[in-house]
Structures are given as structure tokens and as C-alpha cells.
Length: 630
Image 1 (cartoon, rainbow, N blue to C red):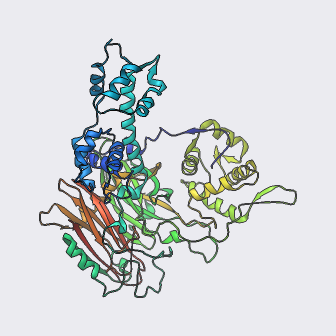
Image 2: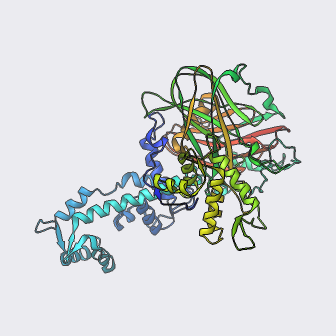
Image 3: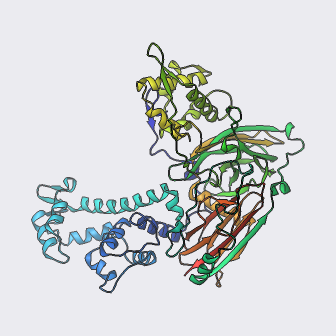
């Protein structure tokens, strides 16, 4: 919870996740990609999109500082002349390649030239004369800012060795902060430009309810990605403005998923099984995180993997939206040591709400990553008119939890009970704590928890979990604010509906040995998983060149229930791809935009979009034009 008995051991700085400790060699970021990522991180701290231009000297100076540079006026003059009207992102990248960060050794060398006593110090009087009278003169205000830094000034002298360390550390921190912001903001990282493109029409897509894609609806003439069959002016405009384009069209009949149905192996009931629960959570920035797992097989065996939504105790006649959520599993394995992870397989078949894969796997350790496209798990836009009550007071003034809140807590308990034994272990509780408070509960705090609340076999019971929440309500004298923080972290809205989470169950059957599964991380797969996802599309999808030089490729993977496209850039330069879905029918994509643009860094690949049918009982047509912008 937001608070619990005893203290919590902070886990900031302890984020050695599965992905950090097992960085794959074949999926590593190249030096060129890293440089481009640094450029974009700095640029997007100043501008909303890398399609925006630098339009002033001050903007150029600011964005260079965000990139860890400290440009002089002479440097600014070199790139911003009287004839300069604007500089674009590519110009900025070119400048950074030329203007390397000043090193500590270069700074020290410059200071030693004016250190007459060679003792590592320069008097403030000498420093003032040099910096305000020679070369690019500093203002008195700028000089005072340096002299007022207590850590590097003493007895009227500047400790320039400490100053050099501080200078380099500050530049590094600027770039680090920009990269952290880029990593946190998934929309920024993917560069979802939407309708920011100059001259592109607005793509205002009206909100859609998250009903089951298998429930019949009156789709009518207008769908989320269709604005009318006769309207192709946008496509004609794209053909005029872009160097080259390629279209990809797929028409899929209603209930097509029956053509390739997931079939359970004949003798699977005799196989040994391991099971774990988990959950997808939607972050504030639109990114989706989930539990991630390690699997161990003692010997080579035929294996049957499945993932399906978790059915909770719901009101009669109410069908939660997550029961129709698309899910998938990606299996990766260590190759030649823990530093190298390779994609082994992913679930491609489906039987109703269950997605699965069957095949033979060798013995050893595997990493299992759950995945959902984001086509249906999106930020809720529903307006809540009345906030649900969480606590009430009895006749004697005592607090108690409302029936609706207890029902929600019961569901949350079932979700965080990963092994399904009806009890919460410390490990399971800590996944819950990390999700809701960002901290872990240490052994001492857990011991206090066990002393005060109902437990069995050193694990917390459901009644104990309820009492823990009641204690928190009493600690806040009935103020539900902290309780709401927990509920919203778990995907609930103010009406106590779980709308931004999708609980699931994973089953692993093995014919010749007992499989073991353990949750090891709660988070996103990050860049390395995205590369594995790209690789799965490139391995099994169709490829089309996007330009005459065959340096930009569109890879498209199609199953009966999902289409995923990946853009691959083999050139030495960044490319921007204009994507137009206007002629698609009965489709929904993970970006919620019919027209958008995607940047692809040099020598890299990126997921462009996932597309699914809005209503599987009707025909759906995926018709998309990808255009390389000039």
C-alpha cells in the first residue's frame, strides 16, 4: 500500500532487473543509435517534436547545453549567422558531431596556464581580470555565480580542479536527465508525431469504448481508421510530397481466427504444469508494464504455453473489458552466457481469449515476457460523475470498508497472489508495493505485519490484507486519499472499475519434466524487448523496400487477429516515415491515430504500429500507405 506497518527499504538504486543484468549482445544499441538517441533526448527537452526547428540563437544555445555542451558565443556565431533563419534536427545532429564536449583534461590544461603558483588554486582577483577582460568576456553576474559556489571556493581562491570536476559532472547530468526523460516518456521515445506534420490533416479520432472486439456493434460507414471510401485526397497529397511510398493492403473476413485455431495437445492433461498470474498495467504516459518471468526446464521436452485473462468475481451480467484483451508471450533464452538473449518463439495462435504456442524446447533457463499491443488497453476518457465510497463510519464512529471497496480489494488480492495458493508471500507483496508505492517491504516490516494481521505459513491471508487496508484508513482518520493512490496504481478509476489494467494467467505444460516459473520483474521490456519484437516480425513477416536504393524496408507480420509493422532503416541517416491508415476499415491501432509519422534512427529498426479488428464478426480491411518523407 502507500504505507504499511514498519519501514520500507527504498529500492531506488536497486533496479538490477532481468533486462539490465542480461543485456543481449545481438540486441545491443549501436554507437550510432546511442548518439542519435542522445541527440533526440536533448532536442525533445526543448521542443515537442524533432520536426520543430530551432528559430533563434537562444534556442540553439539552450539545446546544445541540454546535450552536455557549453557553447561559447563564438561557437554560436559559427552556426547561427545573420543569414540563418532556422536549423532543423538534422542540423543539430551535425553540430553535435563537430562540437565534442570539453574534456576535464582540456579544462585543466587551460587553468594550469594561469596558475602562477602551480598549487591548484587561482585567486578571485586574477580570475576576475582574466574572465572579464580577455577573450570572450564574462559579465560580472556570471563571475559572481562562479565565485559564490561554496564547494569550489575558499579563502578568496578558486579550486579549479574541483571546478573542472563540477563542470564535467554538470554537463553529464544534463545529458543524463534528458535521456531519463526520454526513457520515462514512451510516447516521446517512440516519437509518435501524430498530426504535427506540416500540411497533414487533423486526425482527431473520437474516443471509443473498450468493449469486447467480439461483441457485434453498429460500425456504420465511419470507423476509427476510416473517413469515407471516396476520400483519397490525403493519399494524393502524400504522393506529391514524399519521395517514395509503398502501400500494404489486407482484407480479412469475419471470424477469420477460426482458420488457425490454437489446439491443445492430445495428452496435455497428463503433462506436468506450472502456473503464475500477472497483470498488465497502463502507466500515465501510455506505456504498458507487466510482470516478467524466468522459466526453468530440467530436460528437453515438448511444451505448451498459454496466456489468458484472469476471471475475477464480477457482478452477474457484467463482462470486464480485459476478458477480450489481446495478449501474447515472448520466450527468450540465454545463448553463450547471460549477456546474450535470443528470441525463441512467441504465441501466434488463439482459441477464444486464450493465446498459445506449442513446440519442443531444450533444457535450461528461459525468460518469458507477456505482451499486449495497446490497441485495447488505453487511457480511459470516461467522465466519472460520482466517486465511489471506500470507507464509512458505524453508529459508534468506527470505520469500516464499504462492500464495493472490499470487492475491489478481494480482486486485487487475487491478482497479486501470483502462485494462486490463496496467500500473499513477501515476494508477492513486494511486487504490489513496487507498483503502488515504489518501495519494498523489508524483512523487519514484514515481521511486524505478520504480528498484527492474519497470516498462515508466514504468508498474509485475504482477511489480513483487508485489515491492513482498514488500518491505513484509520491511520488517515478516514481520509481515502492514500487508498485511492493504491487503487489507481492498480488500474481502477474513481468509480472502482478496473479500466487501466489487465490481469492474466500463464500456464506452462511440459511433457517430460516439471517446469518452474518465477516472476522476477515488474516493468516494460524496454528497448531490448522492442528489438526482439522487431526481430519476430522480420523473421515471419513480408518485406517491402520503401525507396529506390533499398535502404528503408517495411516488414509486416499478419496473423488472423493482429497485424504488426516494423520499419527498418539501413541507411546512414535518420528517416521519417509518413503513415496513412485512412482507407482501413473496421480497424483499431495502438496509436489511436489514422495519420502519424515515425522517425527511424540510422542503422536501426522500430515498431511502427499494431492493428487489430474493431469487430471480429465483421470483415476488416487493413489498407496503409507508408511514405518516405523528403
